[in-house]
Amino acid sequence: MPCDASPAAQTVELPEGWTLTLTPALNLTSLTLRDADECPREHGFHPGPLPSALADRQPVHRLTDIGDRELRASAEQLVVRHLERVATAQANADAFGAQFPDLVPLLAGLAGEVPGCRDRMDIDPDRLTVRLSLTTDAAGSGALLELVNSWLGPHGLKNTTDGLSMEFDGPSRGLAVTLDQVHATGFLSWLRERGA
Image (cartoon, rainbow, N blue to C red; front, side, top):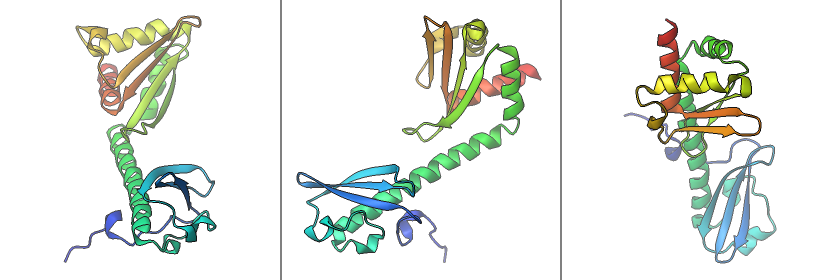
């Protein structure tokens, strides 16, 4: 019989060193999952007041310390949601990395072609996908704009859609281009083919 290894099928507990803060908010209880450095990582609500037995026991270090079964279920769902979000983001980052084992040389080539071009990659917290940001100062703005326009094809910048944004800073004449994972994949693939 197959084993269900999904986070939802396992006994749910807080990650090592993490805590859960329960805060009364009108007729709701606000739940905040915090990492070992006390940074908030996930936030949610439970429909109902905070049980008085928990009011003096903050933060919660173990979900089993929450005696109210429904509140504990809400806390478990919050932890599961966080773990699933992290797993989704990691899977997307891994897939992107697998598509571009040559990412460092591609970005180095771009920096050599566009004066002052800097790259930054992170995870879009809403889409849980890779986001690539390319920025340059005045010296490289034209070259970066021309590259993006060439990649977009015959209609050039008229093809801009959700997932591709450009910001031109008038005073510094710098340019920032942000591409979601789909557009970053397209742009980097185009750079790779163009350089081949």
